[in-house]
Length: 102
Image (tube, rainbow, N blue to C red; front, side):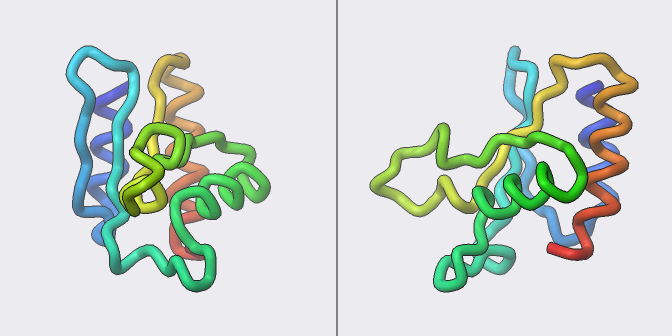
């Protein structure tokens, strides 16, 4: 499942920073400054909420993992691959379908 996520993310040219966790069941992605607009409230929290509402896919915003005093939390999000391969494949297909609207 991890390789499937990495392959799908690699096909999205705007996503450049992917940090697979060593020993974890998730992949951590940094949207970078160019894909976040804090003034409009458009960061990983908004992206994860909209992805859940529009596609039924739950990713976790980085605000749950980063220091709240910094600004990295709203640039990052996490994708778990603890579910089965079919679940992960479906979720990534939905994410790729959703991504252009972000």
